[in-house]
Structure formats: C-alpha cells, structure tokens
Image (cartoon, rainbow, N blue to C red; front, side, top):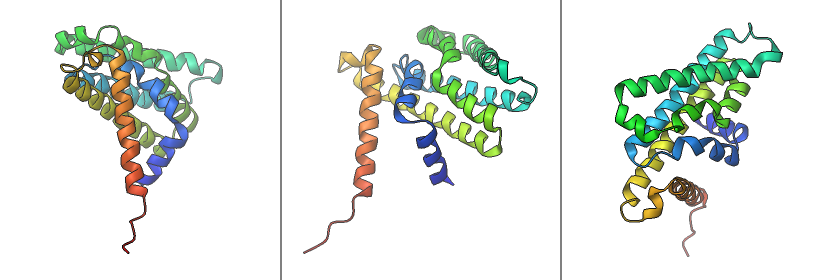
Length: 188
C-alpha cells in the first residue's frame, strides 16, 4: 500500500508542482518550530478542506466548483490563522502573511480539485492524508536545515535560503534512492 501511495504521489503531483506548492509553506520556515507550524497549518487546511469538500461535493454544481473550493479553503485557512494567533502569537508574527497565502496554494488547490471533488473515494482521501504528511515533513525538514545552517551561512536566513535547503534535501533524497537502487557490487 505504501508503494501505491508513493506511485500515486509521483504521478499525480510531479516534482515541479510539489516544489511550487511548497513555496509558501517553506519560505517562512527559518527554524524547526516555524517549519513544523507552517507544515501543520498546511496539513490542517488540506485535511479539513478535503473532509468538507467530500461531504458537500454532490451539492456543488460543476460551474461553481472552483469558487466553492476557494471559499472552503479560505475558511479553513482563516481557522488555522486564528488558532495560531490565539495560541502562538509570536510564532504567528514570524510566519507573517504566509499563513493566509495558503488559501491560494497551487498544491493544495490542485490536490483538492483532483482528489476530493472529482474522485471523492476513500483512496482519494488517503492520498490527501499522505500529501498532508509529506508537506508537514518537508516544511519541518526545511526549517530544521535552515535553523542548523542559518547561524553559519547567512544565505539560509533569507527567504531564498528555504529553496536552497529544499534543493539540498531533494538532492540528498535522490542520492539515497540512487544508492538503494544500485545493484550490489560483485566480488571478484
């Protein structure tokens, strides 16, 4: 099942789409806590929006499907933003306008459109949960890399440092997969 989810994630959300969708999630992640908070907000919005959309998808006419998707996503982003303001105000100030920007995140919107509105099955919801975990993990990992390297390399403290950290993590992942797929060396 895990292999199926990975294959579906690769087919349905190719690399450039995933990277573009992670932009507003990882940009403010200057440390592990900020990364995890932003990843949790994105995951909450994705899962809560998926539940709402799957519950109401038969009531929405195809002509207004995308505006309905925007309204539902914006409502859950507002909930996440208000919860962060009430419980973690200083952290919310650090994340600035990036939390409301989640309402227009291309990764979340395309995933919700494809999985929740069009499919609406249990497997589609599981794929959305998987995507939520992936976004949460990437945001936390980028925040951790920026938190570790930022004090030593100032480029990691600026917003472009998030993309550098994301690139380093992606390159490390590709290298690890290449080593794991390589056939064992034959002994002479």
